[in-house]
Length: 265
Image 1 (cartoon, rainbow, N blue to C red):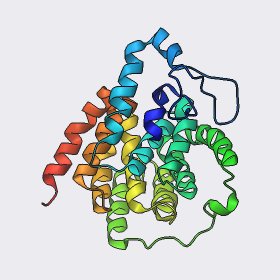
Image 2 (cartoon, rainbow, N blue to C red):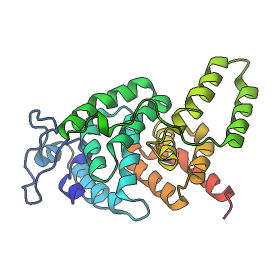
Image 3 (cartoon, rainbow, N blue to C red):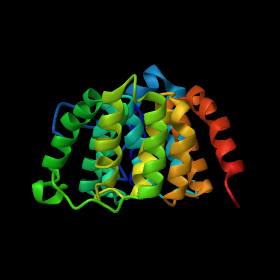
Image 4 (cartoon, rainbow, N blue to C red):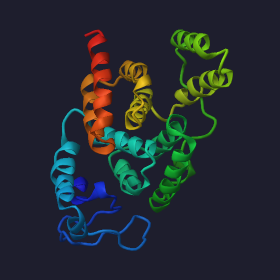
């Protein structure tokens, strides 16, 4: 299994050795740069971390039921991009593709996170992804078009959201309100190359990754309306504990628990 052989993936090693390779095998980046780390290098600095990486993160967390590897890759990539943690991105871009995330979906994840984590973070992800795409011969024909036929808009729900935002902030922040309606919810969210459920999962991940729980309630509800189950949401949060830290996850858990309890069963 790819995860098992990449035992120091958490420490941003970009490629994996064959299954029979020695633990001290030197790993190289996917772009062919000089060797990065060996397992022995990791043990010399943080032996416990290397053990946790192999035994807990890769040996347990990534194998837990309740969230398929494809979704775990989406959550992990979204967290890395949202926090601008580029060192691990080459490995996880490749792992995501191996786990069934399409290149056009990765493209849309990056684009989506430009709005939810900032343009600079998205551009940092582009700088890494371009080399991964090139190495895997992913061309423009496998990426989303700029102009696309948008998904249908839920007019009633969007009207309710727009009215609330306009009443709260329209007079004070008209520019933000305009772009929120015209660009974010009537354009970006309706792009078809990332399913609404996955787009919601990316958004929820970004909010938790950056400790922004104020908008978590509406977005987690939207995610579940879009098909994310409570079990999947719980497992996504468990995955995030290892990638964004326990404090961010513990800040998110009371909000998520409240959402779960208030939804109809």
